[in-house]
Image 1 (tube, rainbow, N blue to C red):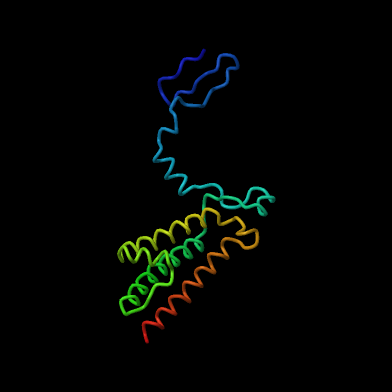
Image 2 (cartoon, rainbow, N blue to C red):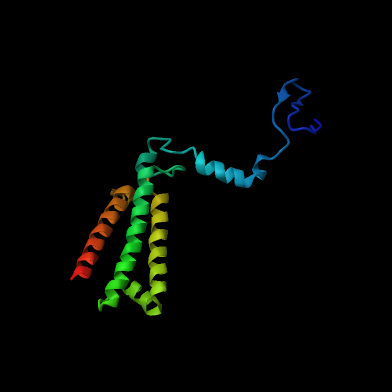
Length: 164
């Protein structure tokens, strides 16, 4: 049985084959924060590995800047929608969404936090499944693009209501 070397840099010798063992006795998993940092910035999977994954969907480690831009735009539009909705409600408007109406009964802060959380959680789910088909028809990326377009139309409508 080999004795474990005291130094990390000292190679271990295997008596049976005279080869140098290059493994160290330090567990690389003990540096958890370093591992998380490296996996965020050096993720390996950027695209599909096998062609059959294109049909079924696949997960990736690294996302592109376009997706990040769409997600940030949707979040900004969500915040703007909440602000404009509260402004319209203060001028005598009414909320049509029953879930949002219930949150409004609690408080405007609960309305804002609930709207933001529901949108953010939905976006997290969408980003994780960005390369999966939505109802086996649409790509998740096209669904996010449509959601962004609908938010832009909603903000334009709210601005029209406010200008009246």
